[in-house]
Image (cartoon, rainbow over all chains, first blue to last red; front, top):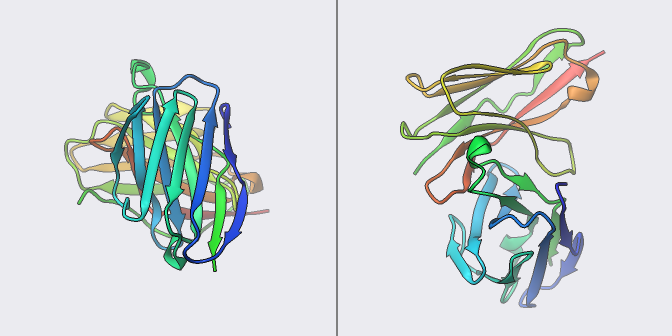
Length: 116
Length: 110
């Protein structure tokens, strides 16, 4: 998985509980992304980061926050989990200076989150 | 809202045949196009990227891009049962992200 790990890989939690998912990369890629994948919706962008402490919202950012204090780590936090946030969460990385392979993204193994 | 459309399938082909997967996109200004393969319960795996009109071949895979028609396709020659997976078409977005189609499920029958 291109030097990308996600933790935890599986998590079951209850509504209203805060949850933090971690993405760690060893590729030194500048851009990192959080997607969620749901049946019937495909992969949708939650938040992304274009550098340390530089983040922005994606298509489905409501209810999520992110932080990136180091190049290698990108955290996704659900402040108060809801059942609608039950999903599979994927982290991805890319290196925008790679002009030959522009915009290519590589995905981590995913985290399956269930909110009861 | 930028969109990427794929036929959800399932697309069933016999072993050894050519599988043809198609994708259309709405943003005429898109510059980068990708095909990912996703096995059940696994993460998407990049198999092809294409940036210019025409064909790009890599082993048994050929990606075809037609920007005028806003159409991308993936051909898999000599299909194998191990090619059975969901294939995701993705197009580069304005935030450096990718916009994904919902995927086409391919089944290769021995």
